[in-house]
Each structure stands twice: as structure tokens, then as C-alpha cells.
Image 1 (spheres, rainbow, N blue to C red):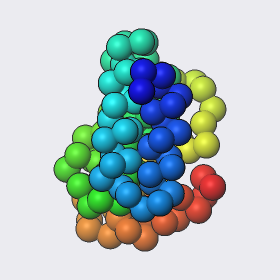
Image 2 (image 1 turned 180 degrees about the vertical axis):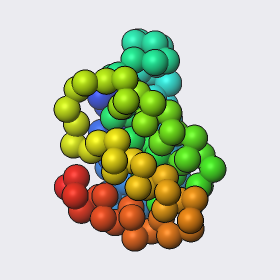
Image 3 (image 1 turned 45 degrees about the horizontal axis):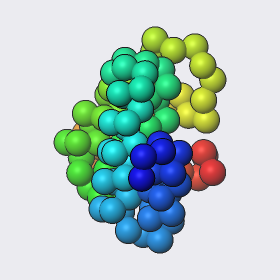
Image 4 (image 1 turned 180 degrees about the horizontal axis):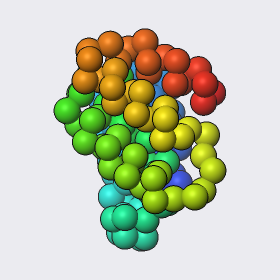
Length: 114
């Protein structure tokens, strides 16, 4: 798969089927592809970082999720684009990861952005 959109669609399909590890690989691949296209600090990376961070939360890869979501938060603070999520939600999610109760927060975020 050489098309970013195709990779994201595949990742979403895998995520919907509960194949989170495979979905994580696809989300990582899409992020790398987009980074090559726009650079590592471009606001267009926000959705890719969000998807990767959320799947890593679902996989309980808290250290990885925290790193990705912190990067997302930095992009959101520098970006004026309106998104389905905002900095406040990411801060709450990061706080819940650090405090060990991320499962409830993930479900709330997913319900809010569905």
C-alpha cells in the first residue's frame, strides 16, 4: 500500500474488527508516510497522531501513547484548525494515563468523537 488514504482505511478496518496490534502498525505506517509528505511538525499530522495514540491507549501501551499524545498536544497548541477533539480532551486523557484510569477516559473520548 503506497497511498496514505488506503493505509488509514485499512487501519480503521482493523481497529473496528478489534485487531488493534495490526491497526497500530498501519497507523504508524500512515504517520511515517504523512511525515515524509509534510514534515514532522505540520498540523496535518494531528489526526494521524490522534489515531495512533488512541490505539496505543487501547493496547495499554501507556508510555508510547503518552509520547504520541504529548506530540499531538504540542501540534494542537500551535494549530488554529478546528478538529473533532481539542487540547483539553488530550490533556484529560494524558492525565488519566498517568493516573492509571485511562480506560474510562478513552471510552468517553471515543463516545464524544463518534
